[in-house]
Image 1 (tube, rainbow, N blue to C red):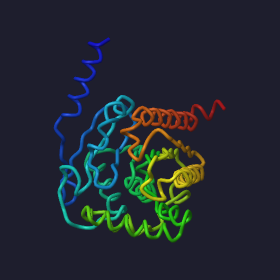
Image 2: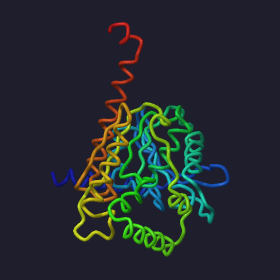
Image 3: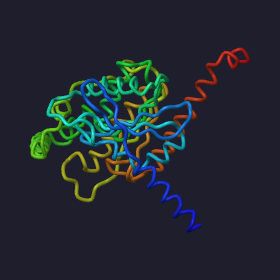
Image 4: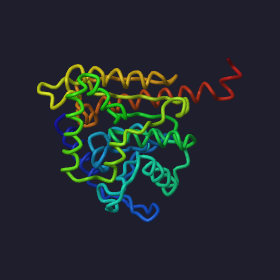
Length: 281
């Protein structure tokens, strides 16, 4: 058994250390990696400031289930570095062109973390023929600040102001202004009826840094995403108290399990809609 484990670790290291490829998308070069085979394609979208390395804990396991693409957005990882503001819709447009450049014709399963969830929602609304399912990991929400204000308006406003200052102190990223604009993002039915799964962290924090991470804040966060997901006819919400914000690092097996369930649902949908199946029913 020890030999098997050592060999698996060696194989895993080989996969992760493989050189990234680059593709020209507009005026920029984007780094990407592809692994796995099969008819289904999964596109991985990282959170704010995160490149494709954010998917390292799950890349190998996911590639055993489907063909998986991870990449770094403009300004992240080894992709073209810039000083320019991008919105989630801008990034969604780049993701669509990335798929075109990689000759991905089939609609993808869009898996996104944090701010990537905003990009995925814009993508699903703008490019309905290019996506057939969403799997969002503790995605960002335009309503997160509402939670702080609902718990304590005065304290919440002070904490929101401080969080903005802390973000600016770390350097304004390409998406900084877009994240704080809190503009409405597409919901159902702006996003077509498709399988949608949201994994939201409701893990309790011993010493919460602000109201958002208090027990009540965690509960409200879970309720927000549960309601959002279940508004979709094929929606599913998974609330986890074992993961923090980076679910793919804390519970990689949960992410792989939920992708597997999503694939099963998609295959069942395709089977039920096939001409042969309809004629027998």
